[in-house]
Image 1 (cartoon, rainbow, N blue to C red):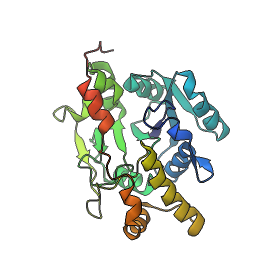
Image 2 (tube, rainbow, N blue to C red):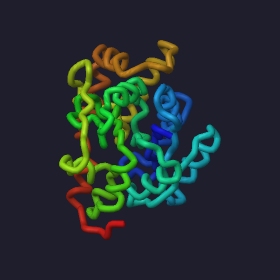
Image 3 (tube, rainbow, N blue to C red):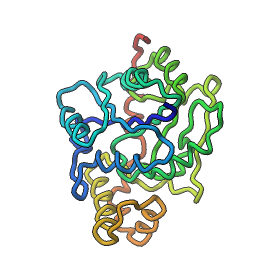
Image 4 (cartoon, one colour):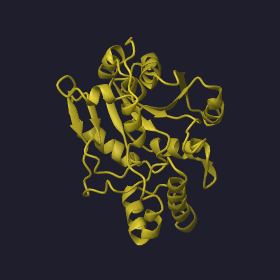
Length: 256
C-alpha cells in the first residue's frame, strides 16, 4: 500500500459536541468527509481513527454501516493512535485528515501527491494559503515512526505532526501552496456552532439549489464571494486555537 488516508475523528469535542455526527444535509458530517476523500484518484484506502472512549461508539457504528475500517487507540496520545493503526498496514505514506473538514477537496489531495518530491518526508499547507478546513498532511511512514519513538512533549503526542514540523533539519518538508492565490482567511472547518452554520449553508446551496454533490474549493469560493454575509458568521474565530492551547499546557512525557 502506498497512500493510506486516515481521518481523525471523535465525539468528545468541547466546543461543538458530536460535531462529526451532526446532520449535514441528510448525512452525518463524517460520512460527507469520507465520501469527499474517496473521490481521490491516488489513495489506496480511506479509514477513520478514533479513541477508545465509549463516547466514540457511534463513530464505529457509522463506519461499519458504510464499510469503512476504523483504528482505535489512545484518547490523548493521538500520535500513538495513528502509528499503531498505520503499522498494521505499513503504507509508504500516511495522509492525515480531520473529520471537521466536510468541505475537503480530493482534487487538492491528488495535486499535493503529484507535486511531492520523492524524498519528501512531510508535505502540507504550511504557509496556510488555503482556507482553514481544506487541510491535509502527507507523512512518510518512516517519519511517522521516528516521531512516535522520539516525541516527548505532550503537545507533540496530541498533535500528530508537531514533532516533524519543528525539525526541518531532520525531516525534508515541502509546502503545498494554493495555485489560485492566498485565501487562507476563509474558515470552512467545523469547531464552533457558527462554523457548522457556514458549512450547512454551503451544502444547502450546492445540494439543494444546484443539485451537485461534487462541488470543489473553487466553486465554494465563488459562492462565498457572492454571499459575504455567510463568511461573516464565523469570522471572529482564530485558526489553530486548539494547537495553541496544547502548547500552552505542554508537559514532558516519556517517549516510546
